[in-house]
Length: 85
Image 1 (tube, helix red, strand yellow):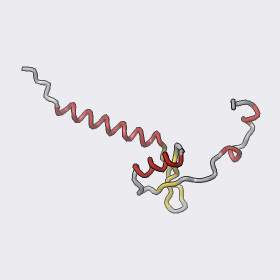
Image 2: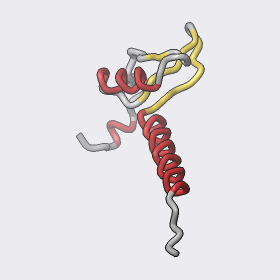
Image 3: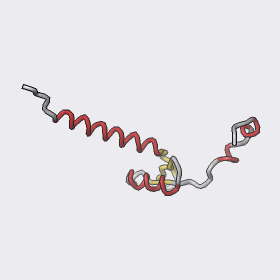
Image 4: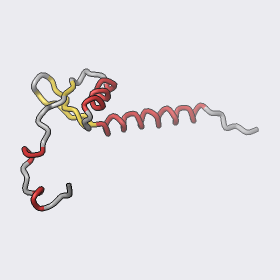
């Protein structure tokens, strides 16, 4: 299905996902990642009770893991002794 003028006239309500998939701020990142995979979605609403306090995406989680891996790699490089005497 291509994007054409007919599709551009649709309203958000016509194509949105109505079922909200949510997590709580205190849920673990691992649990959020599992929920993303099980529900086959790219984002979760972060809710405190009925109040939306944020949105977490699969990209947010991957960025966090990449940063952690980069920091770990940098720390390991700092521990290597390059003295070639």
